[in-house]
Amino acid sequence: MQLTIQTPTADLNQSIVFYEKLGFEIRTQGPKIVAIDSQICIEINQERTARICIQLHQNSWNKTLLQLKDRTPIIKIEEGYLITDPNGIWIKLVEKILDDKAIRSDSKSLLGNYGGVCIETLDVSKSCEFWSLLGFSSTSKDFSKGWIEMKSEGGDSISLLQAQQCPHLFFNPSLTYFNGFRNLEIIESIKKHKIEITEKITEFNSKGEVDNIILRDSGGLGFFIFNDE
Image (cartoon, rainbow, N blue to C red; front, side):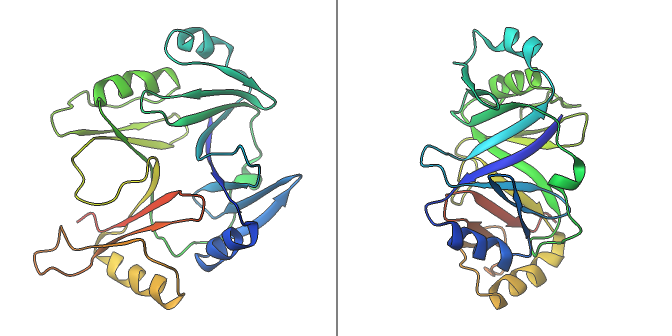
């Protein structure tokens, strides 16, 4: 199974400029425009009905659909099926495996070490159960910390975070990047490339300094650029 992200846009050029500034490679793949680097593939969708969406790719979802039929509406679409998780996150089940060269490049974006997709949820346990049906699992079932990380066999990561735990803006879902103390260097590089910062976070710094930031593309997809030390 493969994971990619769909983000909508009302201005394709604006979206392309945003991702190019971040160091992503822009490619045209048939009717699709994608921004890719060595860690993630983001499809920029110009259709007016497009929404932020987690896209999961495998050749067939028939067995999974049987397990999902009482848990979510299932809409048949050209590429496969459209469903939602318990938090209303759109998920596209695409019945096609992509060539690795189509979803990865040698480019290294300014964002640093990609940590996966982060979802804020009202019920971590319920969300964990749902995502397990989609092929994600966790070595821990301890929900007392208010969050849990789940991974697919291919290594894609989904982090489920209890609602009202984060003292900053949260765009659901968002992409996370964890860079340790190198995050300060990455923040300066983002500033130098004149990329608009949605939120500067000082909450976790004892000196009140900005050591975490949040970015957001024009379609609303969030990027958490965090110091995880």
